[in-house]
Image (cartoon, rainbow, N blue to C red; front, side):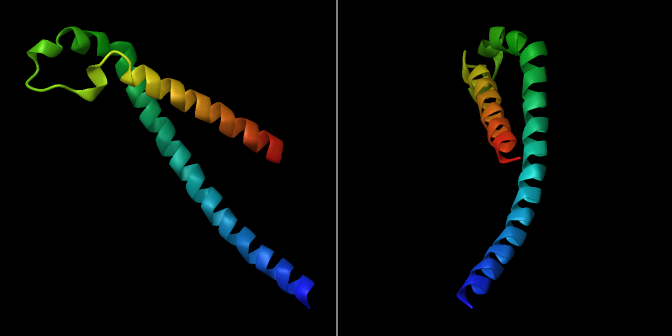
Length: 90
């Protein structure tokens, strides 16, 4: 029966979706760890490094005026969008 075959296919897809969601959860955990580290740097050491960047042997991307702020803001916005999507899916 076509209907049963379609539902079986959906079942197998949902089983794969569970695996993907588990992986996404792990990735989100790692993303949050990364965000916390860069936010901690931004709050504690960034201004000192920014003020002393002329003393460094090379330029560092995070010492421009906006890169860390922009990435933290983007991460925040994406987390809000993800939360909204998840809440609507429950």
